[in-house]
Length: 523
Image (cartoon, rainbow, N blue to C red):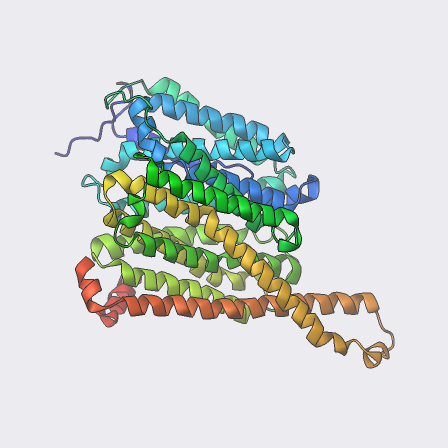
């Protein structure tokens, strides 16, 4: 008979059967938490004297707090007990969620969002690291990452849906923060009553940590996100602030590179970039995240300006994306663990789904489109993002050693969480501005004496429809350019799929058998 999975940090009265599930619940609570919940972005912008860029920057700060903290996770685990770390993380998430909705001073708001991101990652890691052997006794990351993304991608979409529900149903977006604070109180109650301080590892002081490097990496992420977020608003290099910011980014990069050369224990060492496939993985995730940033710019413009949908009207997309992410985690598990196929073709499938999303959006753009028609593109987008993330993280684990894995994972998430999306949003915004300007230049001659000669002629209504049509033409044009980039990404994967490289990783059947078996699996 299989012995129950017992976690030493739980008190004796807690049944062994529910101990892992308590940590699953706590991890889900941490993943639901955040800084500003941008599912209700429209409500925040309308109520507070903050721009859209200010709130997006709060999101980037929250993601920066998570992405740059990875190399410190095990140092904290060896220094403090599991209960101490979880209670500190829950208390930090509780306090920041109570303060953030009432803070409008931007530096303080961004700092609180950064701290919340650190607490969110620390709490999630402590829970998942304690139950990892529960769902994969062999520490097989082809099992771990699909399950982990159930928390990451699933709760990300659920939190947006919850935020919209509170903002619309109770007419107050701040209730989302109170709801998360209530969840953190439940977490603290569970930790106080059910857990104890147990030290499994030998206590290791926090000596030798490159805190200067930690600050520099955070500064680099903040500077890049600030430049990409506010660049269009500042009209890029027409503003002296932009030029100054580019100069500080170059200085920060130079200091980081110098630190990796002279420090024996740099925060992120040079070794993390020298392993096989690491540079390729970082390039691929950058290209893919830039491509998928169409969701944040083009899709939102189409919904808000073209269709006139509010955050609440379009909130059903978050639920569709949630179920699509769950399905993608199942597909990734079947592909990597059950069939034991390789990474390259899974990446090609993810790139194909991403390109399918762009193509569907291109052909669906119409001012009279029903919201339900967008569900299929949302499914393709969500599955593509989830599959690509699982595939690249798993390949990263197979490419580096344990000592540098969390350093490489930190660099990966700096791009995956905010860097690639911020750069992609800036690129799409610039292309959209150029496309709309070109559309107005091409079609403005249609506003002439013949158009005005109609009687009766409503100039306001005519110009409203004309402007809306030009915006949709611009959105479709930029989607068209993105499709070319998506096809290029697919071709790169197919070119990379040579027999020598394919069989060096894992033996995989030909495309015909892959498609046939996948069809049977779905059926």
